[in-house]
Length: 217
Image 1 (cartoon, rainbow, N blue to C red):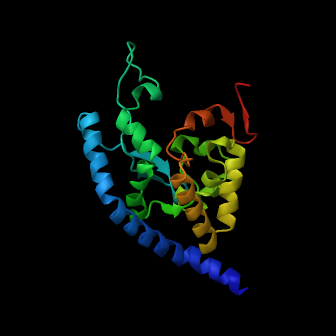
Image 2: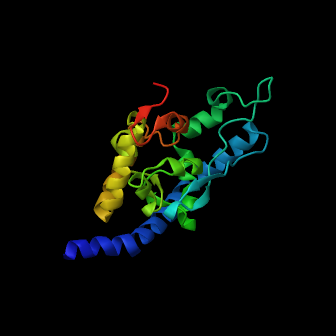
Image 3: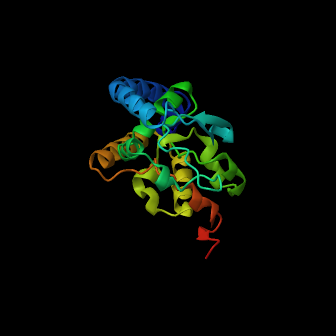
């Protein structure tokens, strides 16, 4: 009973304190690198550094996630954007590989839009695709990294990612957050890459989250 009370206390108060302390420390340590990244991106993208995008947060309410602009706005002869790989700049590739794009989201953590640990926020237009159980991932603030990212990265299909997200919602605790944080650091430093920067949202458009199978077959 005491254990459950401690978990509830952490979820209600301690987690936010943990987020603020972690975000402040992270931004302080990463500040020199972030400044260099901003200068490099400004040169590579004609002065454009940031790419804000709406994502669903706590309770499914939209907020603007802060990301580095890692791709150009190049279009083809019909005026349509070129494929992501063709628009990804050299600087952008480095930023994604080193996960600096995620470090920038510490600003969102300080603002209260996000948490250090939690389900990764997907696009707003996917909200109607969730089952009631999957939608429970919005019962907590979205995170920079989460259980699904350290457990399987993009090798997991959406059905299993959502299971990890809901499992996290039901088991939020300081010990679990610390484990996920350590797994994330170990994975990134090991060069494996958690791949939370990779945009795999196109896969969701071709998959039914209620079955986990591709609609295209």
